[in-house]
Image 1 (cartoon, rainbow, N blue to C red):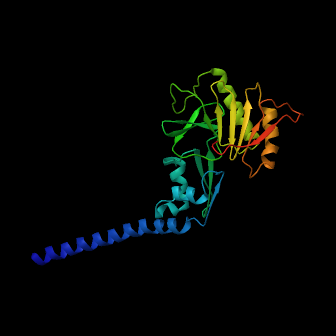
Image 2 (image 1 turned 180 degrees about the horizontal axis):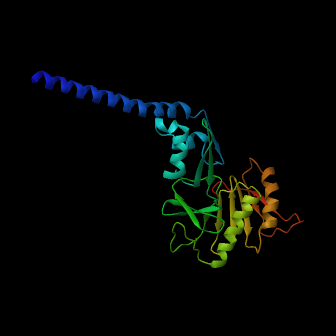
Image 3 (image 1 turned 90 degrees about the horizontal axis):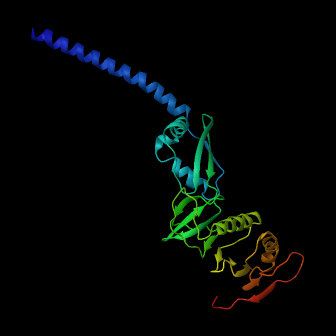
Length: 251
């Protein structure tokens, strides 16, 4: 009787082992095919100016399985998103089993203001799109403004409604003429001063700054390496009424 029980137990164990091996084979073969067929040979990052390709890649591929092209595509297509400052969204596409292309869509930033130790960045419509301790060198800082409150995803509120239009106009012109402007400062009378590296530019108060900034684009090229203050408060297109003087060492 004991021998029969022992033989039956052995048979059950053998059957269990065979079933386990079969399950492993059934699961293992697709896994091997999945791993061997889908792996990243080429990953291209498109559309980023504020981050390097290596920084974007490191945000996408954090574990070994992330190196599987199909897994990475499905993961970012349906289940998760990469969250980075100044990035609106990231699209991950798979051209073939070994090629991934990453499209980065950055937030459009026109300027920023400083508030409670943070840089509050706004877009061309004046909507605050990002708050960061990071200072983007290519984005001008607006100074001389007063705020009751500043909130993400809401419009920048300043002391005068018409002043907001001037700010947007100035930041758009700075971008249009590709001017290297560090700060745009408003005086108590709302006169405008630009700091462009070692060059300070007095623009004054105008109905439009287009002509002055168009001319400034050429002047800054000639003024490279010079520490001067340019007085363009009375500038009129087609005239030479621009006064330039060396900056005071205390400025």
